[in-house]
Length: 200
Image (cartoon, rainbow, N blue to C red; front, side, top):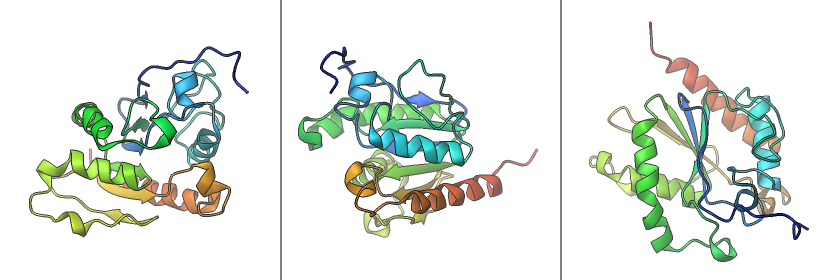
């Protein structure tokens, strides 16, 4: 389908508002999505689902994400992933996740305004918890279960962690994840951000 296109084919940079209060963490660039276009969740069905929802919730300037120069801007939202490159057969290895973890840790340090993290899928959920493990000394890993719609308060003023099924075709086309289900998660996050807004 894309045989005449030139693929990005390199580590995909994160995308969004550097003053974001919401950080969305995905798994990895899709082979014919971000790996092709060079922008997170751009050019594939997962991105179509995600950006429509973000637009409806007020986090994106438009509902479509086709290519890096399409004018899309994120508002108060930043998107990154556990892996920077597309893994073979979409199955990341432990070594790949470990190699990319320092980049995620550094982003978390730089994104000082983030008050909510939305993990898309179990791997992203586990990857985030592994990255912030030094701050979870008084909590056990078993305290955190990946369940769609779940959220967790974390110690040390860390952002609240929210969980959602990944917007992959496998989930959206089977009805495991519907637009309504995902919108409820985003609305819950928005309410949290309003409550957690710093007083002037």
